[in-house]
Amino acid sequence: MKDNNDMPGHLARRFQQIAVAVFHAEVEEAGYDLTPVQYAALAAISTNPGIDQITLAGLIAYDRTTITGVVDRLAQKGLVARNPSSRDRRARELQITDAGRQTLAGITPAVEAAQKTMVRGLTAEETEELMRLLRKAIAAGNELSRAPLREVSAQAAKDK
Image 1: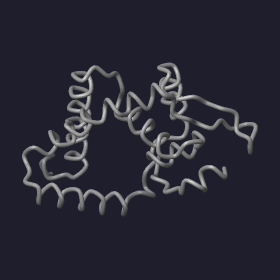
Image 2: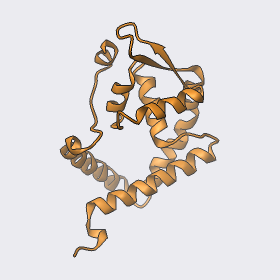
Image 3: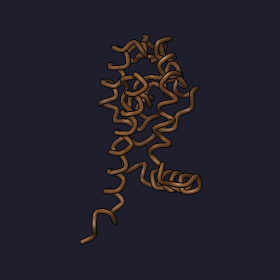
Image 4: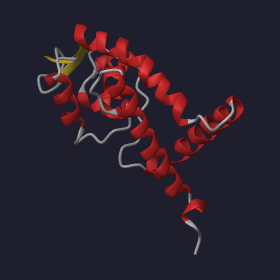
């Protein structure tokens, strides 16, 4: 039987635990109350105004059935607005609010600091290599995920 430290799944889970803890510590220290998924959603809505929740879920590789709760919390915090879609009466278009833009601008330095802390034991070259290998492994396994990443152009998202 292999040691857990020789199993990529175990190491990925441990790194995720560290990443989430570091993210929360940096963000809370900066005075914000957002989870990593809420941050990813807010950033995606900011760069893709008018997208619907299903498209948002694909853009951040999050489960379609639970993205509603993420958007609910962002809306409750006044960071995003849901507007009726002009193309599909069942869908809602997501827009970042002024408060959301201010939060995103204010939280970004803390998120960037968290990213640096997560790889603090690596050189710049090792960090680049880790990122390259993670992207490669994720791309190879994307379709195996319960919530695969879906690349969607901004125009395609608006056309939905």
